[in-house]
Amino acid sequence: MTHAPGNGRAEQAARIAAKPWYRQLYVQVLVAIVIGIVLGWRWPDLATGMEPIGTTFITAMKMLIGPIVFLTIIRGIAGVADLKKVGRSVRSRPMTR
Image 1 (tube, rainbow, N blue to C red):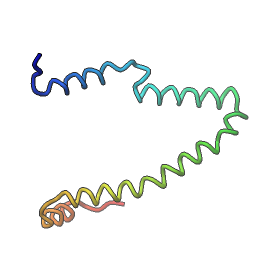
Image 2 (image 1 turned 90 degrees about the vertical axis):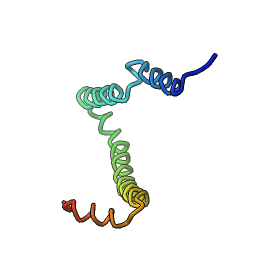
Image 3 (image 1 turned 180 degrees about the horizontal axis):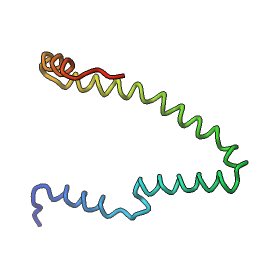
Image 4 (image 1 turned 135 degrees about the vertical axis):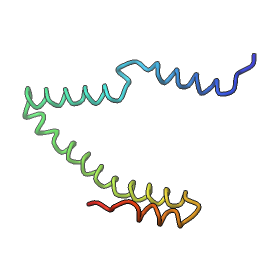
């Protein structure tokens, strides 16, 4: 049995696309939002007790964003062979804050 070039990628893409709806990330996020709303509305004491978990998660995300952005920029600069191109691209884009 012979395989056509790239056939493995097509099979992998088909397998990924065939995930059940409940395994999709956006569905899981929407379900989590609905659960959070229901908890806050129906059992406010339980939701208040779970607040440290959410605060810890947000704090951890804030701590990770800076290094991820920094390393992404460094990797992008390192991937450019000609440093003159880096200078041109930085000067051509306005810096916003």
